[in-house]
Image (cartoon, rainbow, N blue to C red; front, side, top):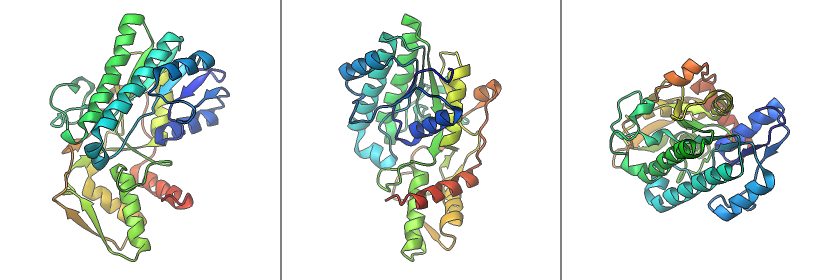
Length: 310
């Protein structure tokens, strides 16, 4: 990519898309293409084809999708599989039809089996059953990987895939019913502090281990991979470090509500026991994360306060 390249960011108002947009604007790109949901339904192949024909993007960041935590995945599986399958298919096909030079597809670490060896290496894909609580989303994400590989093999399309770990940062979803664990924790502890409550009730046992990557680090990785990665195998993006949900909750409490006490509702599901990515491949290419978790949580909480998110 150069600064005059026509770059399309799908989902530019979401967590990942907005971070990539910020990064490209700071770098000085002057032909960034975006479209809101009202302007373009990415599930509609005819509409996506028309948009690509009119705008002719050269580089595509395919980061749009329907996302959520355990509750959202468990109660809306049809939406998660349909929306994501369609979004991946329409954009990849249109990028092929209208000559995009490169496309980066962003998946999720939930593609790996529930009982996957840790840390999870790229070759462990499809080596065992998926986690039931997010199976629909995971199947759609796996299909996206295979879609990019199929277009590479049949048409020679320069499409690549990256699989990030759990993400957080500015423009995250902080709804306690639909969000992922870290923004949900930030909101729960903040509301407890504002309401003068000490006890905060959390789902599960607190024992699952998770890895977290600040979305600005992911945006940096996406630009890096767009410019440097050529392989048809998907590549993991993460920090290489994890912690338990209890340890995460204690960290968030220290930053948001130091007087809080934790209680875990063990009748609720934990999800996968552990999700830690093997990031050896991207490290070998020369990329590493920069934002440590405590600093990232603190800055994300400041963003939450400053933007009055509800």
